[in-house]
Amino acid sequence: MVHHALKAATELAAQGIEAEVIDLRTLKPWDEETVLASVARTGRCVVVDESYPVCGGASEWAACISEKAWEHLTAPVQRVSSAHVPIPFSPVLEKMVIPQPANIVAAVRRIVAQPEPERI
Image (tube, rainbow, N blue to C red):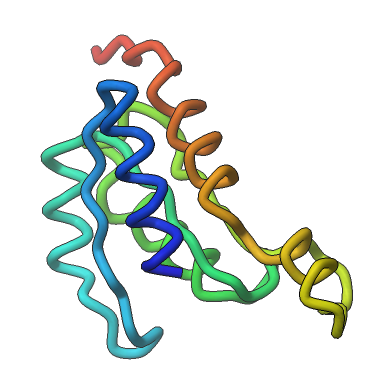
C-alpha cells in the first residue's frame, strides 16, 4: 500500500497538508519505534493495510499506537483497509474493494479536521 500512500501524500501536499509515509514491510517485527516517534511529532496517525479490517495489520498497529502513544494523539487513529467482502477476481471490482489513494486522503482529512483535544 506504500505506493498508494505516497500518491495520497502528494495529493495532500497540494492541499497544504504534510504527511509522513512509513513503509512497514512486516507485521512482526514492525518498526514500532519509528511509528511512535512519528505520532509523537504529528499527533495523528492513519494506518493503511489491504487486508480485512478485523485481525489485520492495520488493527494491530492502531491498537499498539493507541496504547503506547495515547498522550500524543490529537485525533483517533484511522484505519484504511479493504472492504469486509470476498476479494473479487475482476480488476475493476477489486479496485473498489482494495484501499485507494482517495480513501487515504479522506482518512487524513478526517483527522486533520478534528479539533485539538483539551488536555487537563
